[in-house]
Image (tube, rainbow, N blue to C red; front, top):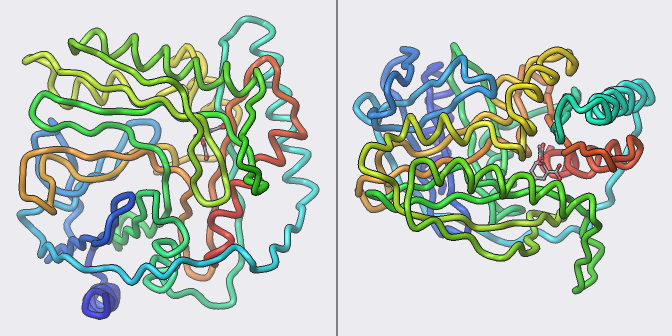
Length: 352
Ligand SMILES: C=C(O[C@H]1C=CC=C(C(=O)O)[C@@H]1O)C(=O)O
């Protein structure tokens, strides 16, 4: 890991783009070190490299393999305990604004504008000091079951995160994706019980994904919903897989899935319009997607491995902008959704 730290620090100093990432439950990580500062964009999804796309689909950037040194590194994964005291400061204005936004979302659901909408907020945290690579290392140690990354491009920005959500994995015609929604904080109990609100919220995602992939694939299968933990947060998850039809391009499949009701809503267009109109900030790469495009850089085989950009933050100088969102249904309670967003923010706050 020390070699990669030096490489990344040199690239930072030279203002050259790079990305470091580590797949869920992996013993090794990968770094892409771009050799120039060109901004590359994905055109037709046949490109090879590391992709990062915005929520609104407006920008899909690439660190191309052809312009980069690709470096493998092993991880120093000493597991961190959660014993640290967590100080939760409540910003009253943010709470009032977020709860009002959620209430507006519930009202729109009651007016039949849509069935579900995922509403989010951004929180600025002032930092006394910040070390990008050290923070990335802390994310790896704390969240080994997630996709952890740190992305730097002098003309695009600095982002890092630890996401529990796969968007799409494709190898030849075989694909996998997941439906992830419903949140509860880990209390240490071995029995995880879900309320009807959370079950319904996750079922919306599963139904949407299955209905979309059935248009482009055969032999579609899905598991029973089960509980899964990321850091100190539990979610409900269903695994979906199948065989893509020969004319189902990556571009087509991603276009059908993204953004799923896990980060947008149902139906997609109405809920997206509500988000864009009412959230009053630009999600940018939060709830976009990122990962390997057309190459598994560990095995050098042709496959794609993409994740939804959750539990992430953008760094601007000595300020971190944290992003967190909550699935809103007719049964949502604004104060509970606020609390959920605070719990999600702790994923990032613990490493700052
Ligand atoms: C939108 C986020 O989470 C999504 C994924 C899992 C559970 C979610 C929920 O319970 O609302 C969200 O749908 C986020 O973490 O910012």
